[in-house]
Image (cartoon, rainbow, N blue to C red; front, side, top):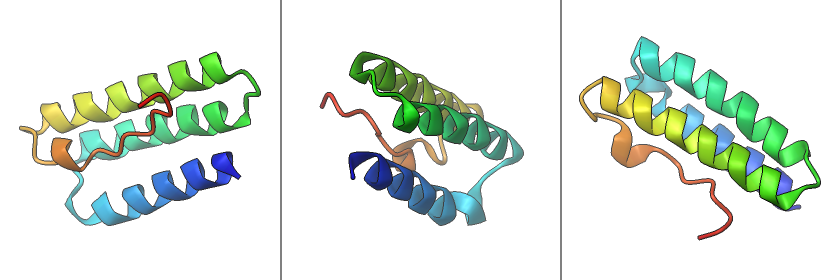
Length: 81
């Protein structure tokens, strides 16, 4: 159930940002989505958290690359918070 929720949240975030994403954002979102899918598939919680953290970092970096226009909208998929 948790994995479905994470995937659904990531999908909704991607759709909501699609209209205002730069090319850098789109590339980063694809990379982050792939990492989030890996995280959802692993039974190891530590690995899941690490993959989600890496996905968040990629999304944050892309947001900062375009002047921070989308940084505030970057979803936080960390389960440790």
